[in-house]
Image (cartoon, rainbow, N blue to C red):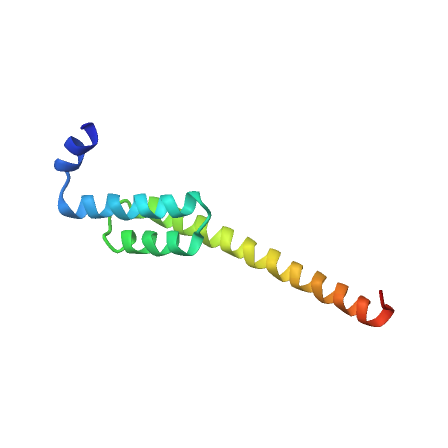
Amino acid sequence: MENHILQSTLSPAERKFLDLMVHGDNFFRIELLRPAKKYYKLALELNLETEKVKQKIADCDRLLAYEIKVIRILVVISVLVIASILIFGK
C-alpha cells in the first residue's frame, strides 16, 4: 500500500525512471550485466539522477571488462592444455 501511495505522487517520468532502475537492479543482482546496462541507459535518457545512473553503468562496464578478461584467460589455458595433449599425448 505504501509503495502504491509513493508511486501515485510521482510524475510519469519519475515512475518510468523508477521502473527502469528496478529492472536494471534486478538484472544486476543476478549478474545479467548486459540487460542491466540496457535498462540503466534507458533510465539515463530521462535525465533524472544522472550521477547515480552513470555509476550503475560504470559498475556494469567494470564487471563486464573483468568477465571478458577471465574468459580470455580461460581460452588461453584451454588452448595450452589442448596443445600439450596433442604434442605430448595422453
